[in-house]
Length: 415
Image (cartoon, rainbow, N blue to C red; front, side, top):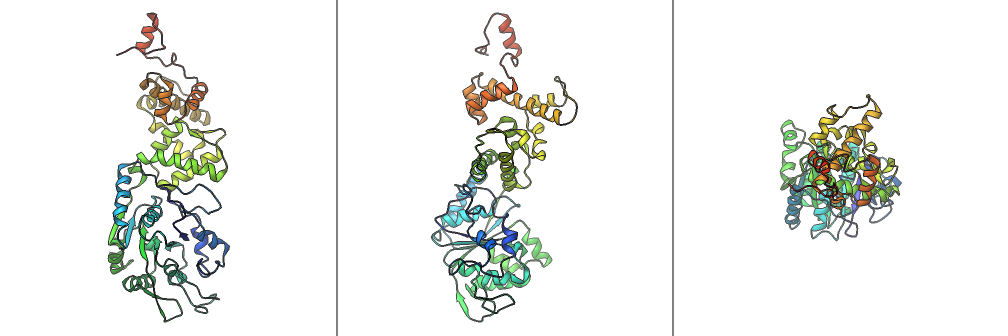
């Protein structure tokens, strides 16, 4: 996928975007991916070139925003970007699929002195092998079958700005050698031409693969690795920065409302517990897709556990408080027969226990409890009615003793 970013576009969130159009755009690389001199020949590729930060087409709204960095690890990472932005050296981003490598690349570009010039992104895994050098360095008319016009490559298109090569570990050997030459001399020749062209770009590369291991097996050039890893940034997986999960979920909720034309405003406590308890092997990209799905299928203004993918709902039991897990496993509260009814009952029970736990912590002050749960007071009141949660029903033994002694349950006993 090829994307073009400029300083007038918004700054991204940790969404790990850009994958959705890559396969379509990659098949079009043989013709017209330069938006500087003429419109691209392919509508699919044109859509990729117009893509806003995060990989959402410009026709959809709300997919760009400030980066989300609630965890200490990501706060440190974005602090490091400020230092890296002062340099023009290449940067290598390492991390699992979906961790937001392109988002970090765009943020680095936006913080650099090159932000007024374009950032051009390309997914190396999406380019047909025979078109890789043409995509990177351009071609002359007649250079190969189908080359009906002269075409710039991404390095020329990004002159003065930044080139982002995603999945650089997928480059074939010939393209690795050609890329090394360009990085060393900052001069390139289009396919079918011997004329050298000066370029001035900063390279940001990204991969989820172990490039050092690939060098040992001959799959990647060691001299190219030494050239591109002058500065290396490792993005932690989402499971290692749980503080970001809720912030990202709420961010994706706002984005999905705009892109899907919905008015889903809340994530209820049970759903939030499931989201927090899931490992997210697909990282932020998987989380975004799960939230978008939930927004689409939600029947009201609140995402419930049943709106989440089944694999995420299965994490609800493990994400619940210890006393809730004991009850869900068949402790003091009997469960209905297996099946969908049982799942709904378990999830509702879990929701109720989470809400009651926060109410108890807040001294049964609903405003404070709603704030702690990250929902509005209106949403909490709705949930209390829906789940039939009353203070009397969930009173502790001490509270019940006070009630028998004539004390009111309006205020809790002071311990």
